[in-house]
Amino acid sequence: MSNTILEIENLETHYGKIHALRGISLTVREGQIVTLLGANGAGKSTTLRAISGLIRSTSGTIRYKGDDITSKPAHDIVQMGLIHVPEGRKIFKGMTITENLELGSFTLDDDAERKRRMDHVFEIFPVLYERRTRDSAFLSGGEQQMLAMGRSMMTNPKLLLLDEPSMGLAPFLVQQIMKIVLRLNKEGVTILLVEQNAKVALKLADHGYVLETGKIVIRGDAKTLQQDESIVKAYLGE
Image (cartoon, rainbow, N blue to C red; front, side, top):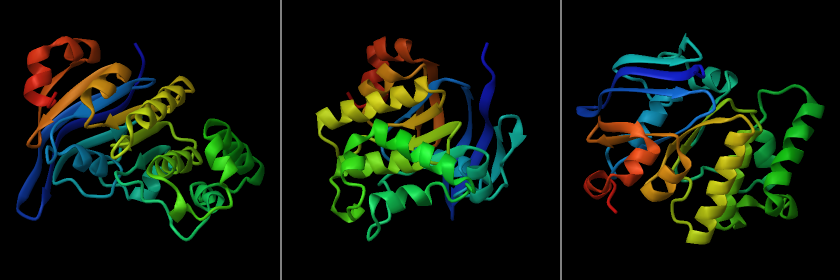
């Protein structure tokens, strides 16, 4: 059995008086794609933000590769190889594609390694290479998503938290992005995927969790979840 890379136990978070996460526990093993599903407001993005240190949990534990990272600052978590690609892409407009990618390698001192990583990004996303000197403000939604994913790859992630990578994209672009998610996984990146498109996510994933109002209500093998029509109708809005 592969090693556990991420383990969350009884995680609770609050936004002021709002109780956002209510004692969630989940496990991600090395080499897996695990998907976190649920309606808007269920707590999916909050879970990722808590893992990556962008918000503080009220109680519970987050362990990454056996280390307790519950109280670690976000920049330390990045240096450990745990990378968060947030919802909405958050690229740096007014900067070129190349400059955006270089910012993704801010923890790196080795210029040869930086170039190797950038070449790898350009190989996976040829459109970014073609437009590498262009201001990222002028990219389409799909290209911005590719840039956000490419920037995360510049850190050489071991665990990638992907928040709604298909949001707002045309169906053919969704397929393209998901092929890239699979490729990154085959190259050794473990992925925790938050996705509203449940059918697409469960096709990719090994394991799935369904969140409802801050609680995990269902967990299981992705293929099993995919075939259970009552689950799909009740929780996944299909």
